[in-house]
Image (cartoon, rainbow, N blue to C red; front, side, top):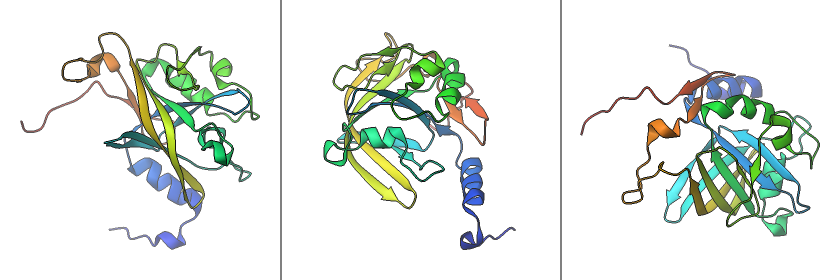
Length: 203
């Protein structure tokens, strides 16, 4: 068996071990708006649900190579911290996977990744941050808190509005048609996985 003292690992080694071990990871395409009105879009695979009472999601943002905060986190911060206090999570689907890779490229603050990736932004319903045209499921959130964890920031938001493609959600029981959703997950490096190959365990 391999035993590794984490304290002896470099940051890059720790990153690789986590990225290749915690799989598959769901991917959030996080849309935010700066206080000046500039729209930002970026993918995050450190993303999950927090709970349902209240309904909340989180995404975790690392810092840029120069140590500055990424735009998504900067914009999602509460107004008292210089942000707008809002963000929208678009569930990533296969047809947008290439665009997700494109939006991960660093741009100067204020430049739109929507334009770079050839995506169209649709207005938010309850928040200012837009959603992706063609995304089957989007969660509009208001930031509850931003928690620092070393060089990372965990952004927690309460879901205030959900936009779903017609027919995706059963309005009686709120079950989703997973085949229709067609979400993808992130494996290590540039490898992704489809969610169409599934099996049930137990009753």
